[in-house]
Length: 489
Image (cartoon, rainbow, N blue to C red; front, side, top):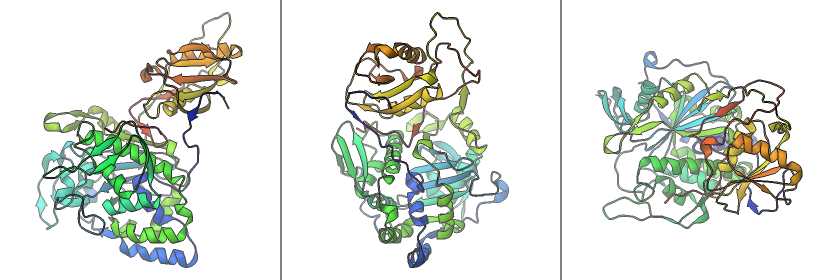
């Protein structure tokens, strides 16, 4: 492991098992394997789950499905309902009916060891197909905001809309209301976030605002505070749903990471108490309203790790009245998901042509790199480490530096000068700094001048054992394993 005397705040390296993405964590709680009378009692809670009638989904008009196994790809639609009806849902405004301002399409890839979570902006201007409303009447096709589909015909209309727009089949779905979300957060004893500045979202006369009030730095949010954080919109950022999606994705990652620290899943008594509330706040189709089915699903994703969960917003462009239209890149993304291909796509780099040198630089696999993020931008150390690993470098460790250098530095001892130059050649940026306190390998401290666009540059030609191209991943996504502070103001 590379060592350096600089003080750092290290991200958690704890591993996790039997845990899914944050907003489906209630499913994991339900599915936890318990024995004897406790398991019998939990199975009885399946009667609390609200079953949604999906008979209006015409199989002839849907994308083709596949035979599901415990390793097959699967698409799960997560809808957050803002209904004020029911226990734990009052006190959040006076809007009647229900909408789904938070909609996530989760694709688990073949093998179920990696996943992508796609946030669908509620203000996407789309065509909603014919849908049946709550009175059983057909509402003809209309072009308007995406979240109108849920208001028109509930989850079935939302599923129809997504499938008609993307050609991606929705295999399963769940609806979580305010109360379910709060209970999951409280079951984790809160979720820790970090803010670069204080954040407030006061209640406004005439409606609006969540009463959120958080200081700068680290805070552990309880269920009510977490709900305020993910729902706040008008008074934060640019007031748009798009900036709110960024905060929601940040919170999803924080929630996943905190699940690794929680003893919740090892406490049967607490699980039963929480499940009693959560199942009453959960709605899904008949085939998933079974505790046994949910348990089997949870076991099928036991090897899913936070670092393999990618979060992305549907690619878009701004149009009139604050709405967005999906871009051509969105079409490409949905096509990749429909065919179980990675997104962003893997792009092979050109095979470098060897150039004679008097003293060849060490190959990347011979260079140990210790990566520190010296900026306030969250996730840079992790992203850069992934990119360097893709290029063949050995990552000793990564974390957050307490130093805030203006310029990116590559620190090295005299004995490792050539290794430092090899890293500089690969990055195409940075300043070499001789530092004998660097005990092993080289240390990269990312400064304010960092240009992420060049962080995956192809290294200068060095002798290699294989000409196989090295894949690099494009930017525009975040990982559930990314940590750090964000500017949510």
